[in-house]
Length: 126
Picture: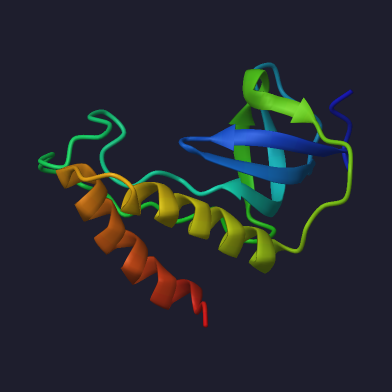
């Protein structure tokens, strides 16, 4: 089922992606080549989610196009359908996260919005 070249959905940290199996699966992880973004990673500290006052508040980028990530087998599922272009999928996932954060009024949301504005420049969205 998780054969090299097969398309999958995968969760990595707090982001979700469509990719293809790049190498045969190991006992607990599989190498996935990223082809599209379905959910942009959340900003902040993974160990203190939704805490805007966390001392270590990290900017989290989406995995890059064709980047290979070792992903736990339990969060990898087969994918059926057309794979959207990476840049379009990144923009759509980014816009969804931006809208969700703008609807919140917490310190975490405010800090996350600041990080996303920096990422917007880096991603070179027009």
